[in-house]
Length: 210
Image 1 (cartoon, rainbow, N blue to C red):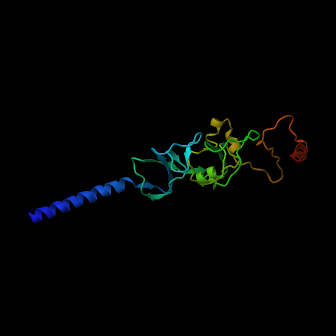
Image 2: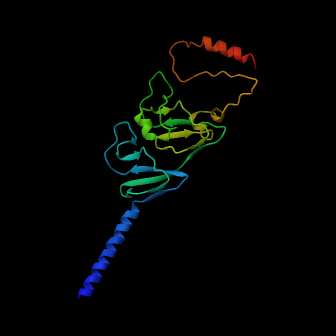
Image 3: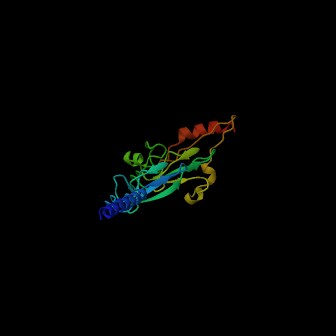
């Protein structure tokens, strides 16, 4: 009788340990070296009106991505994790970034102001530093980036036409050593007649060398 009771206790302990292991394992998410984890919280406090990215644990897309490695405590009944590839910008190309969340761009500008966000890899920093939604002023150059796709869309030459852009607009301009170039800024809306007299004269002077 005593032996049987001890076996029952051992069996019960083994079952509890097995169930506990299943629960713990169900919370583990493994992210590979060439990807990031986009976390979606299934329920929680609602996001503030007009926002789509969670900064304080609200339900929905979370700002912070999971880095490569093992992550614990992400219970499947509470969190969904989508593995997203790293963003790769090829040599000789640049990429336009479009933010889906943030503050509104003032009416006198067409591009969002630049804020510190580690080349758009820090979504929390972007929103915390009052980044603006829409087309960003700062572009991405050749390299590999971990960017939250719920917040940022990266426009490359391959996807330029979807934004009414020519793929050539997202290639690095090569200037021959015997020439100079003149660039005209288009990042600000103007009212009335634009004032470009001084810069236009400079363009004509440099353009005469072509």
